[in-house]
Image (cartoon, rainbow, N blue to C red):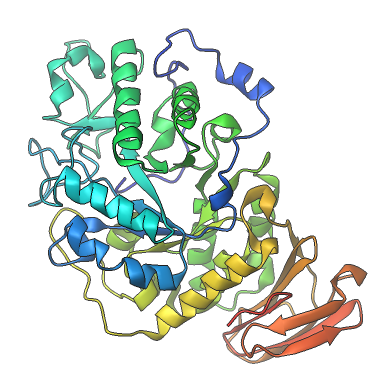
Length: 463
């Protein structure tokens, strides 16, 4: 959702399910769950956010489908499509409005194509080895949504007037989760996209604007159709990750990377506590989605180049190697350096080639080939080191025989650091940059890192 406030607020809402107004409380659900199962195909996956209307000049499913071979070469596994439903015209902002102001949950936006066009895209994506995750807006609708004929389905003031979720989102109307009929209709609409189009999961917009128990009920019923990958646009709402969602957002990491990139003379201590939180905050196999840009960041806060400056490559290496599922946003893989208009037509200009495509393809391959970097409990925990050079951030991850060691130079001069990894990290490695194989024979490892660069050693060769 645009202009999303990253500070998680306590929401005073009734904790009820989509279909059962007497569903157990979150506390009860949390006590009996051991973590939401992760589909096997998501264990090593990277995710790619698709902005359909900006992806091509046509802005259609057919036009995007032509990019599937290129994205397959990039190596990403999951395609997250921003909302594809019709956009409300009432109180619309800009010429096209927000894709998060949904007019009908069971239709495709005619500007993007037909039902047949979308089904063709999903089938082509599946045939190419992708999984398709649909953006789902459950907290609010547009003002001319077909549900407006049921005023009780919406939050109203004492005068009976339907309200927006907050004063910043005047183009949408807040849904009332104390209404069982609305909850049933919402779940029915989610099922429609799974049974009709065979989608593989949902990225749930403003997830903590909806009662957790409602998401738990949705996940339970959707999983009965097929195993779902469920991603919450939230952070810090731990009960959502018990059985409703596999992953949420690591805004804290993004915020810290933005801050460090704009700090004079930063050192490793600026990042250590944030990286530690990626391990202790997530339990039972859940994990964050890590990123340096997405549709909100690009349109509202600036491109990664505006925010991170000369740290883009280094921090890309970081967010691909710390715990979490890395996200690439439309255009990021070609070094796109322009903010896309959010409410109006604004297309990406795709170059014939880009060094950044090679850069991100290799990072995706690094993650895919090294189980130590896989998602949730499929991957290894992060261990940080107190190296001999404060300007170099060093950490490792290990899962069985798979080992990865990372050193990121936060300074502008060539640096060398020595770390003590212990005997577990003795053995053969490949240098990520050169592909050369070498042997570590001591528990102490000395690493030379280029100026404003990074070094990665892994037990699997990455080309």
